[in-house]
Image (tube, rainbow, N blue to C red):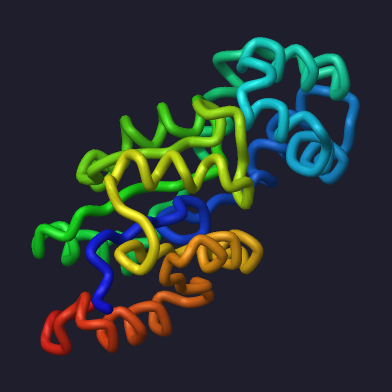
Length: 207
């Protein structure tokens, strides 16, 4: 069955990111080395709490400041965090082609409000999706079924009608368990090849 709806992960699929950029700037104005700042921000309970909405950005900042000794403001950390994102133009063009063919598209992402505010302001492609399921708005992170259910309700579809692209295998596995078609995204070239096989992209269309 040719999928009727395409669901994209955001990070590492449509935009790349490097938390080390923000960590180095925070470290330069605190007492914790950059590597430890990055680990604290990204691999501790803190980011999970923030991206599931258990804590807000003010609490996130307060915890970062207390742990790292950062001497700046929340607004400065927001600016640092914004600078970590780089658009993946080849995949953004894939979305453009799907949008031009009037195939409904959605975003399913583990993320936070600072990241989304920046991406909305700076990346025009982001406004051209039919809907968005963000972890911080729904109190759950992939691969929790709750977030996948949000997409199904939003799209009015389930099972094979949905194709899901994600760079993490545990997330695509959760989609497969729901009957979705999935692509474990590892490179733009391979994903494009599969999309052409599925007849979602034209062989003639430049990518």
